[in-house]
Amino acid sequence: MKKSVILLLSVLLVLSCNNKSNSRFLFDVHEVDFVNKSEVTIKGVPVDAELPMGVVEMAACDSFMLVLSRERTNALFVYNDDFKLIGRFCSIGRGRNEFLTTPGWSAAQILRNAEGDVLMPFVDSMNGGLKLVNLQKSLKTQSTVIDERSDYRGVNVLEYEKDGHKHRLSSALYYVFLDNNKNHIFEKYNPIVADGQVYSELNYVVTHDSTRIRQFKLLADFEANDENYLGGRVNKHPHRNLVVNPFLDLDYILFFDLDNDRTFAIHQPGSLSFEEKLPVIPIEYDENGFELYAERRNHFFRSACADSFFMVTYYACEAFPELLFFDWDGNFLKSVKLDTHVSNITYDERKQILYGLDGPNDRIISFDLSQIVADFTE
Image (cartoon, rainbow, N blue to C red):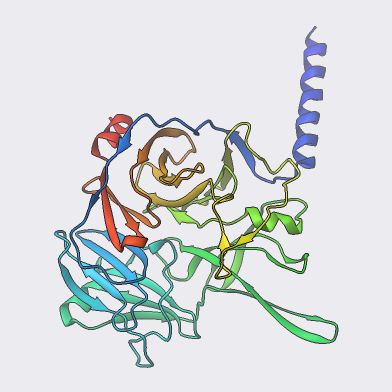
């Protein structure tokens, strides 16, 4: 009897290993049911604030709201707790404390120096490199103060030769900084596909002082059509080296617990998976030549992080999103419906208020989450 049990366990182990080795998806997957769980709608309240045109990113930080726009003169708007404008910084120009283009601010991340000052890591993509703007010094002098710089440009560029000619391709690169260190970076290298040929697969890379120290592949056999499903920004725990990547076009969230060498994914049971043949998405364009996303962007969109949980907006072919809450182990906590379409979101953990950008109407909407959060943190 004992021998039979041991033999059975051995067979199951071999089958398990074979299934894993033959799996197309290279992450451990936990099936988590999180769709259509909302029972409550949270009513948003417009914030009374003078906002710039063309908001790019925003972040609630300490007693400040930081709003980055496409304005050429002082693109960064800083508000106090009452949403009164108290400073404008980061102009476009060629001065030492200016930017050649609108600053890039991946995940609207905040770093701090030894004195506790807020540092905003802005990338000036036109060969300007990374520039860390000191918020407190800028407010004190009412002029942009850049404390630190580096050559980091936050762009994925591939050069190759074809038919005797040199070509240059580029793709979006999402990144966050680890250990509060501008030289320790987690990067998502989106795939580069041209004319049906794969030039670069999706990769997640950790660099330290410009040296690659870790790399994660997503798929065992990458196909050109996979590119259409792999959009989605990365975000990070406020203090730990814990990174999440919700996908735009699939019901997956990837987790990278870098301090504990743990990577895994959660997936909605029954939804399209990487173990299936992913269908080709027909791309339609409007009269101005812009791609229409209405039929495909029906999954995760933007995320915001807190100490014990993170939240992400989720669209299920409806005008307004759900807001889904997960803990950092991938467990589903709760979901609610929002009564307004929002793009960018940021969370003020002190006030337990979510702020969302209503871009078409150039306004910020606040959502009181205090009761919702109390339901799963008490």
